[in-house]
Length: 200
Figure 1 (cartoon, one colour):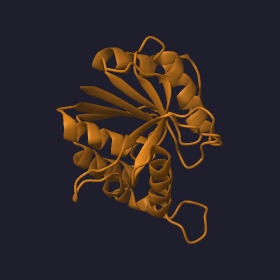
Figure 2 (cartoon, rainbow, N blue to C red):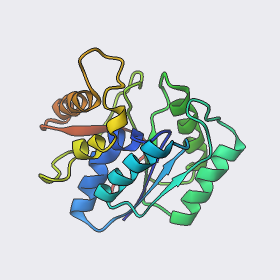
Figure 3 (tube, rainbow, N blue to C red):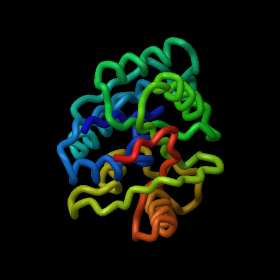
Figure 4 (cartoon, rainbow, N blue to C red):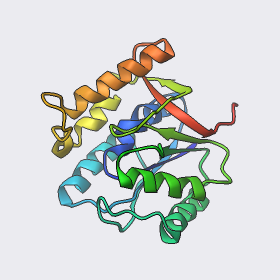
């Protein structure tokens, strides 16, 4: 199983599909690689490396774009498309396209173009997604020392950057996982909007 997860920023992947990646890894051997489309500073690179170690991700690729300034253009599409051809993933996780953050929107659009010939492409949600209506769910069980929330806790510099009073990133992630769990009839879940999903 080869998984490619694509995010606009450090921590996007962990929030949107980190739990699903861990569940796949518990079930079978997986090769996981990540594309992060903005170049983070020193602190966020170190935080991402800690999360990568927990995911047991093989490699992280960074695209040379500034935070809030990622463009939907040929260069962005080509970078993603080239990585897809190199890895030949079985599943690709991408940001959901309807989002108030321009980076999420532009990365999603680039991913849709770059993955147009791929069989399994699932869009994940972020804190700024709009009208996200998942129809595919992954139940989150994890292990005592390795959960979606452990991955997110690696991103310490982002925990309080929610713009919601008295609620940190981990609390919002747990609330989302509980809500998606209710929809999926389990305790915790992540939800996805399928672009294409080949049942096997």
